[in-house]
Image (cartoon, rainbow, N blue to C red; front, side, top):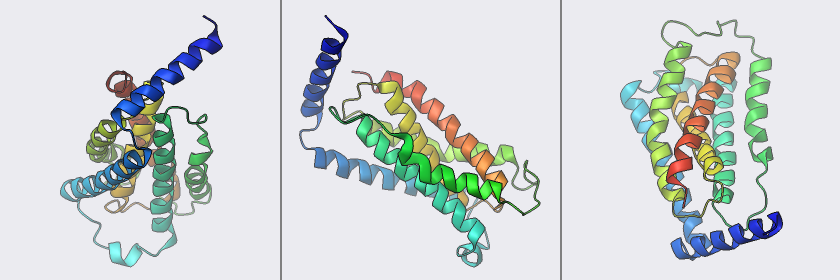
Length: 214
């Protein structure tokens, strides 16, 4: 059997599996959107318990540094949502990482234009280790829920689908942590928020290879 015939067979089987698991694409999209919203809510709730909302939240919510944190993390989450959705839809066109470009550019721009003078490793209350560790913890419930929904699809590349689930959950966790983190330094956010999201991406890939295989 030629390579093209093999690829065609895989796509056919994937369509059949997807039809058996969820016959209406709209139903999957709706469920996935609800799962993403619940994941964000769970991350915010967990962050509130572990860290608490920053005391000056109402005062800083319209300031540029804070707005960049929220905009960049939610932009990455939107890109991850789009890509993860396509990764478990048989017959979809190839994945394009351009969906992640807005979030990446926002983080890069904020990091490059940081004039806060704050240390890259953070300060005693919000260190790099605390930042990364907290984002990872508040992202775990989101990863669990997102993977459960993706299992109802038909991922022909479970590792990639899992990685995108990890990216989505990490971005949602980072957005939630933004509400508690008092360090708005652009370089700190660009480096350590990104590091936490990348770790979640790797974790999602490792788990996805097992739980999304069919």
